[in-house]
Image (cartoon, rainbow, N blue to C red):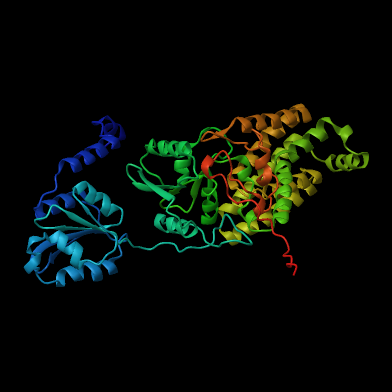
Length: 533
């Protein structure tokens, strides 16, 4: 009777090849195997490459009644109905070409007179065959020919265009990006109908072979920034790219900074507007989130709806947003500092009310604040992760029940519940989730500083945050511009939103000097005056 195999025995066996070595050998095998005119050899090689890939179909058929051929495609990535009706049916029912066509090779004849597919190209290596098949194309190999046809008839199920969930607007376009890269590119083309909108493609991921597209408007985007983005994307070496966040972490200037240095969005109108300001978009296949670089801090607190409403309303909302962002950052820490070290700053009646509410509470104010903040974040996370109907009930009912029960039990004071609730509401006013997350995380060290040093600690922490923001760069662009360095002419679209007819220039740090003008001067509307007769 054989002894059972132990784990130790498996570990002691000869070390297996690393995956990098396997990939290198596969690539070398594809490079070394030359394409021949013998269809049987080519088919045998492709079957060995796709061995175990049950979704890859190798379909033999006869071209022009006499010539053998095969079609290679991936089931689910190809529009099989179009393949059957427009390709295979046409090829199998066509008569043998004679007369003036006898001097043409079969591939040229098929390409020019039989197949009516619009997207068609020729390839000349088996490595390109494998690449095109896995990208969703259908490849045709004909016996006796060394030229191969690749047909762009990709298909399969895709999510339809819908309104973005993370960026809801009252007024504005309702379209959002999908997981299909070609669809996303078409959404951009609809908004920027100019040949100056350039698209550069990259293939990243040794295994996933994910297609990445860099988009910019030539003549508006700065050449140095374009080259830097191209260089950083080209340096990425990774086995797979599942989402655009993989790319984001490789191209940041300060990878350990908590503040977002790359903007992400699901809205094509936001991408188009940023491209016209000289920014560069990075679109990734299989995700609806598009990246935008360079990024400045003030752009993260602006909503895309600011430009769709009247400038007075947008200005009012921006001011409210700025106030509440600052409140979301420092409100709990200021409360902790004042109630712990600076009680003399509180009016007498309010101080007596706080003392009465805190009398049964067993914890110091700083511990009380940390407990409430952590509980609030847990409820927020639970509301996001649970199914939508259940999540809303958990986040709302949970907050009410836990808060009321904690106050009645004497574990938490009522003023602390109010402060944390107002802080949570304030954090919801931040348009970008990444910036909102940074503000929420920074609240905790500020609470520690407030509990240790009072308002001096809070002030020190806020100054440290501002110093960090001023020193940040996004692809060489100052993160806090145009406030630091100060550019008064560019403040029309920072704290306020000036009328469209007065915002004459594009951002000076992200656009080419030759195309600064966005809106020509002299377009301020005025009542028409009747001509004197």
